[in-house]
Length: 287
Image 1 (cartoon, rainbow, N blue to C red):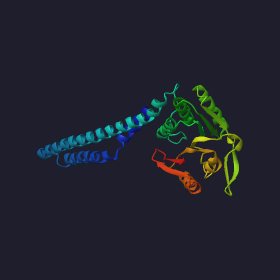
Image 2 (cartoon, rainbow, N blue to C red):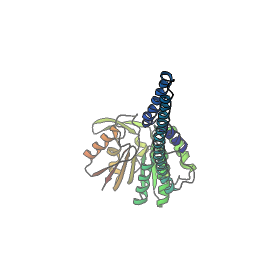
Image 3 (cartoon, helix red, strand yellow):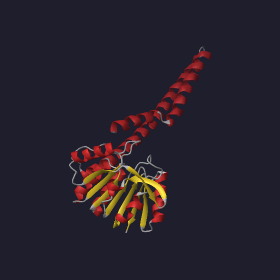
Image 4 (cartoon, helix red, strand yellow):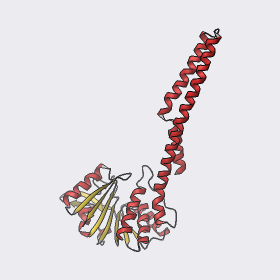
C-alpha cells in the first residue's frame, strides 16, 4: 500500500499543473535565445546580453520548480502518513493474531478503516451480546476481534454468496474467532414488504436470531436490487433490543440514503445520525 501511494504521489508531482507555467517560461526563453543567435549573431554584445538573460531565466525557473516540487512532495508525504496511520489505528486496537486482508481498496466492497473504528468503538463501549452483520468479509474479523477484546458476545454474519460465505468462514477459523463469529449463507429470496415486492436473505438464515444489540448493514450488494438493504429493518426491527445500534455503511450512495429516509419515516423510535466517513455512514439508535 505504501509503495503504491508513493508512486501515485510521484506521478502527481510530475504532472502537477503548477509546473506548466515555469516550464513554459524556460522554453520561451530558450526559443528567444535561439532566435537572437540566428538573427543578430554578428552583434556580440546583444548576443551576450541575450545569453545572460537566458541564464537568469533558467535560474528563476529552476527556483520556481524547486519550490513547487518541494511543496508537493511535503504535502503528499503528509497525506501518505495520515493514510497509513488511518489504516493502522484499527489494527493497533484489535491486535490481530494473523495479518488481515487489506481494508478499503478502491472499487471493492471492503469496509474503510474509519468504519472499522466505529464498529470497534461500539462493541468496546456497549459490549453487545448479539451482533448481526449483513455481508461478511474483513468486517467479520474486525467484529470478532472486538468482541473477543470486550469479553464476549457473538456475531451472526449473513452472506448471500455461498462461495464467499465459505471463504469468510475459513478466514474466521484461521484467526481463531469461531467462538465469536458464525457466517451463515442465506440465498436471496423474494419478499413482500409493506405491500411492495422486494428481495433479501432467505428467512431460514436469520429466523432463529433474536435480541440483537448491534446491527451492521453492509449488504446485500446494490447489484441485487435498487433498494437491496431496505428490508433489513422491516424484517428485523422487532428483533432489535432497546437500546440497539444500527450502522449503515455506504452512506453517500443514493439508494442507501433513500433507504435510511424510509426507515426513519416508518420507525419513529429511531434516532438517526450521519457520520462523515470515507464512503459515508449512518448510525441509527433504537431506545
